[in-house]
Amino acid sequence: MIVAGGVALAAPAFEDEHVLARDNSEVACTMSKSGLTRVSLKDDRFASVSKLTTGVDSEDFTVVNEPNRGDIYVSVPEGYSRATVSFFGTTAKGYVYKFSCRLAGDDAQQVFVENKDVETEKQTQVASAAPTPQ
Image 1 (cartoon, one colour):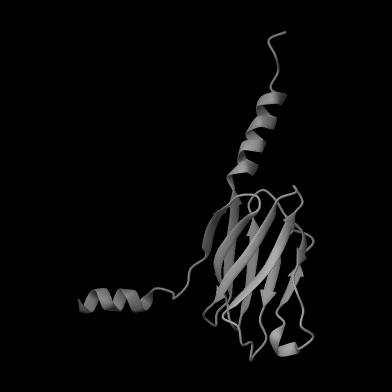
Image 2 (cartoon, helix red, strand yellow):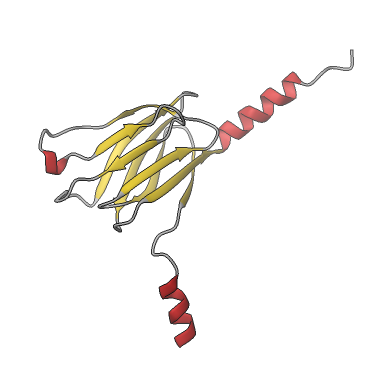
């Protein structure tokens, strides 16, 4: 029991999160309440992010779109009173996701979102580009 407890304490409190999503679905994840959270899409990139703003600095979280990789970075201000952040993300391939993420932990977080439809689309394109016997 003591060894198991020691191993549990040695493990990080939060690990990178991998989420499977579909177009127009809700992505439930965990974001850092006082650090930075990176959200990355597998085989896609964010084109835009939409969220409401209140005009009160302590009630508005920020989302920054990194143009080279297409990732977004979310940060929550000190004193943010809500337990979650919620926003919509539209991807370069036209998919839309509603993010509803709880806040926990002080360290930076990473969330990796994968859409099986993107993988299916990629396989279809490869199959259609294959040479024909003629």
